[in-house]
Length: 149
Image 1 (tube, helix red, strand yellow):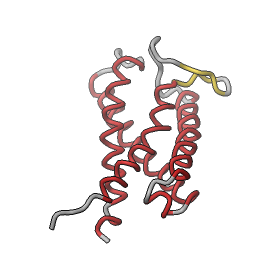
Image 2 (cartoon, rainbow, N blue to C red):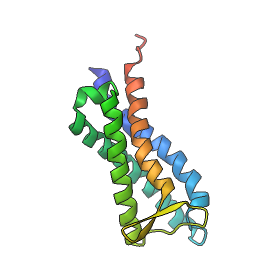
Image 3 (cartoon, rainbow, N blue to C red):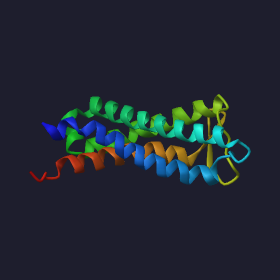
Image 4 (tube, rainbow, N blue to C red):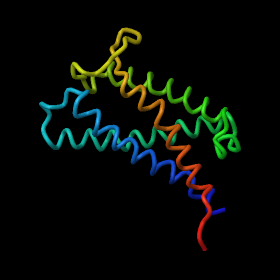
């Protein structure tokens, strides 16, 4: 019972950790943020990280609905496929919307593709595709470890 209760908070914790590392790594080189002031940059960075945690939880919840809780609990092949496809669709949609709204710009080093007339970055697409699945897998693995009494 304890392992089940802690599964979603563990997904969120892994999502936070993985996305924090990813965001700080990519934003230094792949986004055009150098002209922003410290507080604006810091606010956007932490806002993005907490938003990423919500995305991780949303992708996991949609995958759970798609394949059922048992598949997600043991990270079956269908769970992986579901998490990756939902993450891919979410990543393209969210990055497209952010670019269409002009929320941020890319540096010359960001690899990009054009989707429906807007240039979207490949790094955030890979991030939102892969990190929710990895967060769930790490949380599932951790929740299955034997506990010392």
